Length: 160
Image (tube, rainbow, N blue to C red; front, side, top):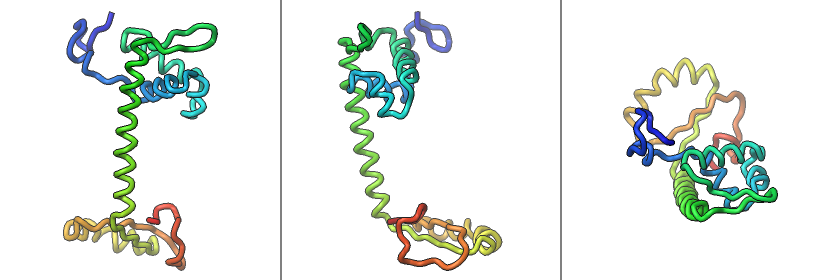
């Protein structure tokens, strides 16, 4: 028996709510690889964590997504249908994330490195006024000491 937060059976809240993203990731990997252990390796989780996530997803949906027999798993018809949709959804998200990352790499960004004392006592108190006057400028502040070589590029926090 499945109910929503108010105890109403089969309400709109219950059917419109998405399952856990982690459970969907575990399910998608297990469905694609047809193996919970390999899915666990790919996701850097334990076999038990993947198994529990898939079981919770099955409980949430109210039906089995895998048939478990002879220490193997096989997708049910409902599992195959959900696996196609979840895989398509993750592909859309991967594509969107790649586009955002690409545009972020091409966006102009200034890096301002200065002594920590100067940053804290002089720059940060003036920072809100600067941002209000120049909202389109992306500046990354770095509290660093000593000399800075402009040839040093691939450092954490610095654009490539």
